[in-house]
Length: 211
Image (cartoon, rainbow, N blue to C red; front, side, top):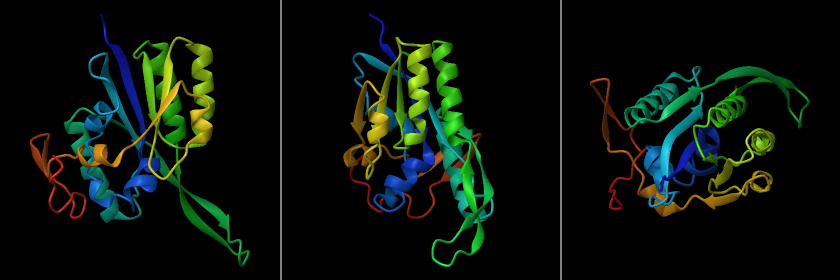
């Protein structure tokens, strides 16, 4: 009997800001393919594609450089990155009413929606796992049900988020467990296009006894 085909759609910034930035900073060198495999039943399901949606903070070169190293490490293990961009947006300070410009990430929600729907229509999965707590993705799950009612949707809830609105539009949901994070880390050195990539300092535990 054929296994259920699983595609995983990972909202990189949502995962980073909710789980990795402060709660688990030593898990930033995260193997998203391995994490995805820990979210399924390997006896009846198989991972077909893992997508990573994010954008580079180009106005902060050192941060962007580290992020790009991570993206290359993900490419080395077959994870497909889909990158958006940041734009400047005028905001108003709620305290002083002064106006200022701030960078705002754009296109991630749209990129996830387009990729998810395109894959569904092309019959590239049976079940889609959306790793995000962003309620802005709820409309695309509704549209997916209308276009391809046979496809199932699972929500993978990042730590420190409830994803209540998303869960209401899904067939099932799972929480990311700390032990799965700690057991889903890339090796310190990864080779991509014949070049060795080394994990940035602090992105891995000092002593990784979980692997």
